[in-house]
Image 1 (cartoon, rainbow, N blue to C red):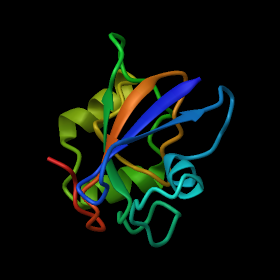
Image 2 (cartoon, one colour):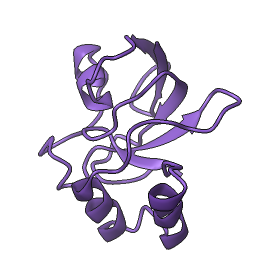
Image 3 (cartoon, one colour):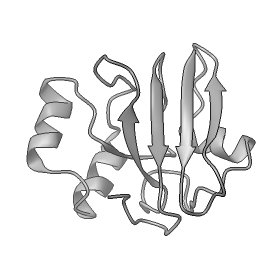
Image 4 (tube, rainbow, N blue to C red):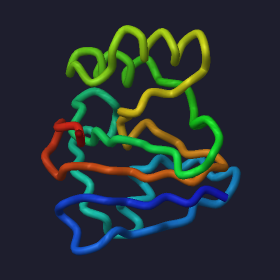
Length: 124
């Protein structure tokens, strides 16, 4: 089971939700289901409005699914992923810190998901 802690200046306090193992719902779908005010527009990985910063809360490397082609293009175009992070994602299977909530499907991991509340603006 994945434990996802959502954190944003838009929220009064952090909210933790659980994703069932084997569930293929994106972080955006989990946020919507739990009424978390994560911004989004296209829900298809093209606009970049649902950018999130993902931090592992475990003592193990981040997991998650690989970057989709749309997510890769959008993160590169928005300057949210470096060439080294892209290389690490493609060659070493190490997901970057910035992802798109509509494309990111958590696996069996405990993560912190941070978002600014401004569409397309990464959390520093």
